[in-house]
Length: 251
View (cartoon, rainbow, N blue to C red):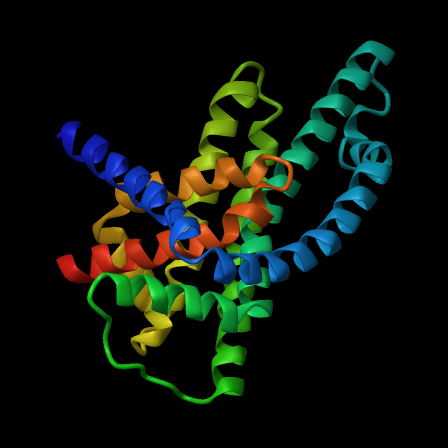
């Protein structure tokens, strides 16, 4: 029973590695795919900077119950709260960054996904419902995924106060949660081209949950590297297309 999740997780890692090879096949197209990611990065960096600037005040606000504690304990709980807030922000950053970038760069990432499918013998006939309708659907799906990541991030933030567990287990769970939502986002280009919606993504990915996690966690960790989200975004879309084909072919 253990071998199957490990094997699927390894398959997800390999799909991510195959997505990286898109740089060698279409360097010009990949450079175009970096532009929307760079625009999103500048916006998110500004917002994250605001959070870091006000993190002390926010930490004090969310730990109001410790106002009457001794200085040592109050400082310790404030630091833990600050680390937790930054952790949640990073989780939301990675998931929402992908969502916003996919909306901004839809034509570029659609072309990258098409190129990947063409290299593998072609994909299905396109099912188009109009640019504005697809854009609206993409925005709604992105908001839904981001909201879910925030809802899950809150209990993770609270668990961050647990000694040892908050500094070891919680970050691992955060990476798995972030990886799952990234997979849901990144298969969207290929699924939408087939006329499939968010519920279809979730249903198909659940059949290969560990494959989706293996792929998504790799993307998540790369996105935590400075500028990694910008440089890896085109490859992540290519890998997401490969993941979509993997789960759809099996179905």
